[in-house]
Image (cartoon, rainbow, N blue to C red; front, side, top):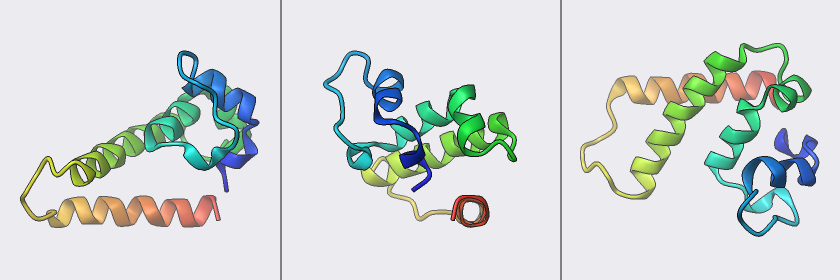
Length: 98
């Protein structure tokens, strides 16, 4: 729901300057979320109470984990540190976004 606060025109300008525009927020990817949240103007609209640089750094790590899982880049089980990082990120989202 957080990203829906960003007008779709702004989303398209940030995420799809060379691709067909989205009509709504439903087709956005983790990379799109990252591009939106990296933008200081959008950040100030959405989560000004958090440190943008730190949050985006963790979001980048979470996106990398998600990509590895979705594309089967790693056959090893997820280690405990990675699981804790994901839990912490999820708890942060629940606290500040929900």
